[in-house]
Image 1: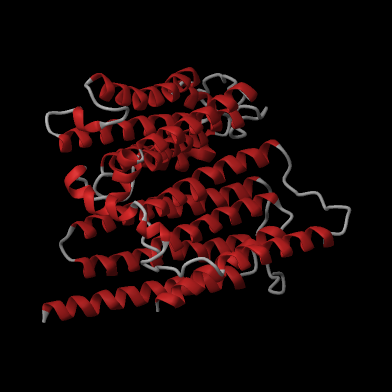
Image 2 (image 1 turned 30 degrees about the vertical axis):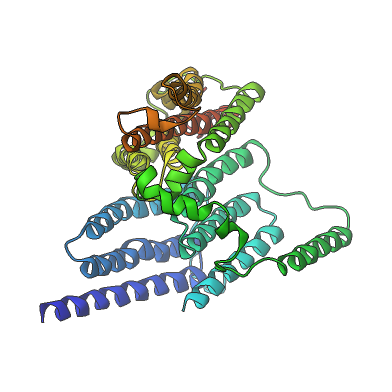
Amino acid sequence: MLDMLLDILSWILLLGGALFLLTGAIGVLRFPDFYSRLHAVSVCDTLGAGMVLLGLMLQGGLTLVTVKLMLIFYFMVFSGPTAVHALAEAAQVSGLDPVEDDPEDG
Amino acid sequence: MQYLVDIVLLGLLMITGFAIVRMRSLLAVTMLTSIYSLFSALLFVVLDAVDVALTEAAIGAGISTILLLATVALTTEYEKVPGHRSLLPLLVVTLTGAALIYGTLDMPHYGDPNAPVHRHVAPEYIEDTPEEVGVPNVVTSVLASYRGYDTLGEVTVIFTAGVGVLALLGVHLRKRTEQPHDYKMLVVLRVIAKLLFPLILLFALYVLFHGDYGPGGGFQAGVIFATGFVLYALTHGLGNAERVIPPALLGVLAAAGVLLYAAVGIEGMLLGGKFLEYNVLADDPVSGQHLGILLIETGVGITVAAVILIIYFGFVSRRPGGADAQDPS
């Protein structure tokens, strides 16, 4: 019973993560300018990959695999937002302005 | 399902390849090259070659990208548009490609147990590794023990590359940077880099010393180790990184790794064995093998890490502005 609950929960997390990854990818393609695209990408790194990793941890159970997945999670939590922050800052410093009210601009 | 993964990965590889050829922005091409390497690494994982995948991910997607970026920063960001038509080169490439594909028709099918590569020495290595070397990872036993002489050659090649870069470019020493003018800009990066730096080094050591049991070994560990210092140089300035790990020390370390490898071989000779025979290093052959593999992998790791840092410092310190704009010298 508990096993099945954990399995269901892990699948919900995996599919939810996949959904966030997909929305992030669509966002990168569809959003109008660099900053909003970054916003879409950061979802992939944190929620998308994070939920997939959590789901895999539940599948792994109390094993060494879970510990390794936790380390990857730790790494993703720190590196993903930092990378996006660095990109945004680099864009701002090099003088890229956000696009306002121009949905046609690709 | 297996085929689907293969086809998707190969298709993505092809698309990336075409994109690399079509793009004129060298920065974009650098990023695409990194993506190409990542896809290759995934393909290697699918083919169960995890050691190669780890190498490809660390070197192809990691360090090469950084070195290419450093090169782009030194040269120009856009490829020049060629003045001539590319019909003749296209013809040559098409003909060569067709000839190569024709050549593969004679090759044995993928996974064919009767293929020459699977019948020559490979079965011996796989069967004898548990008794003779006693490490679970056969790749490590082949690379470090059975083919130790070849690996020594490879390490020497890497060492020569480092010496070549030192001779051609040299490493320009920078002043230590106390408080760069746009210090606030990098503050998040610095804090996170400080947080990740010890973990990267720890992971490199894990890959190095766990290479007997899982994927990994000296080459991958050396690259990961160097990446940690590259991250430090990127966030804290080249001058500071050169204080943490001085280029003069790197030269010594690059030589020390190769010498450690060769010394293990000579030690085997002194103890009555052949060159690079680890059996005589300890009381019983298997623990001798373990000791020998550990020592030579350490040597490989030291040389690879030092040479990559020499190349990185050599490239980046050529630029007047330094690794990053905040370096005042």
